[in-house]
Amino acid sequence: MAEETGATVRVLLAEDQGMVREALAALLGLEGDIEVVAQVGRGDEVVAAAVAAEVDVAVLDIEMPGMTGIEAAAELRRVRPATKVVIATTFGRPGYLRRAMESGADAFLVKDAPASELAEAIRRVLRGERVIDPTLAAAALAEGANPLTGRERDVLAAAADGSVNADIAQRLHLSEGTVRNYLSMAIQKTGARNRTEAVRVAREKGWL
Image 1 (cartoon, one colour):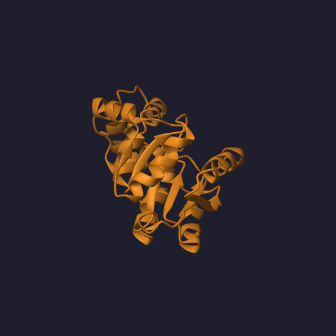
Image 2 (cartoon, helix red, strand yellow; image 1 turned 90 degrees about the vertical axis):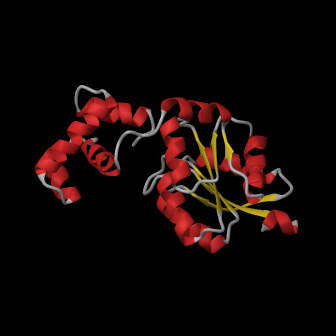
């Protein structure tokens, strides 16, 4: 491993906002033991770039086009398990933290933390540690687990663009009755009055 051999830590940055990505790369480049060797602006480019550049650590944003950082983390864990994953996001939501940890992420930080904390998190995950923003960890414990099942999340996410039940059913290969049942359960579990409000609540809590 890079840190154990004294070699430079090879890092990939995945962030859809170019200025933010370049700023992070510049700040990490000031660290003598860290080198940003790959940068991507889409979640579905993460795995190929990580493999091609043989990175030690991937620093991923959550909300990116093509694939979320959480989905990319799970895929990277499957394809290149030796690469450590740090989620660095603006969206410090307890639900996101839980899903990131379930996907195999090694660290979860919010972007308003100093760059020195990100650099230290990169070093710590290489030592086999898990690094989680303490305030967010406490909030996640207080919030409890995501009450939505995987299928309820799928159906609710499909309803987010205003699609009717028939379209959702066709897209997810379900019957309209099943879609209706899943949406009803999702609305009930989020304490919402309708599907639009259920989507909003689930997104705010990081459940979608």
